[in-house]
Length: 324
Image (cartoon, rainbow, N blue to C red; front, side):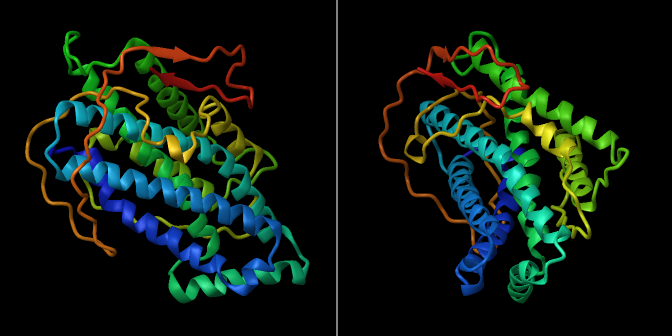
């Protein structure tokens, strides 16, 4: 068991996020949803993927926080976590355009029949949740900065290791993480500075996302605070070209990894404190206690294979990196 504030804060809020995804999943099983527009099916597919990744990340982090593991097991566990985070950001990039399309149809159409399924969706969600569809469906985007902090934490702890440490990141692995972290921080910072541009309404939802991102990116330097339940409802909202652009560079090199490959180590993480962890606060549903880990091959991760690509971050082509 270890003590890690960044992981603990992720665990404290992950179940609330999963509850929101489950509430939308309930909506997808209603008759009106199946008869709705094509965007509904895109949202159902995307949120299902986010739900699966969230469950896997929560389980992975819970094991580290609640079980006594060997150094080899910790190394593999953290490698799997970086793999999952990479998959999340690949989905994050494509989800931006899906969410934009959803808002555009919901808030710009004057066609009553076209608006009916959206009203039915909000009516159903209001019966089981305090959020409407727009506020609920933005949560995967708001989750991005929280997961980004996990990457930042790996880099921070790697800085504290001696060059001789067996858990020290390779130069190639560290470089890939720094590309993702620095590009994301740069675009979030730029987005925060331009809440409005000529001819463009930078709506409440986008402001909420940027504000939340700024708070989370600075959280590692501040004292822990109680999780904030941030929600916003867009009225007449248009999800503009700028918001699309600020993530296109940040996540262009992440390629989705099949679920079957989630357990494949892709990154050697740094060591953590051996200080006993505080008990994970209970939540609804309760945090599950992971079973003992089965024996696994803990072969040393030592070399990096980087796929060559002449494309820069302006390209939509994705790059991947794997560890051998």
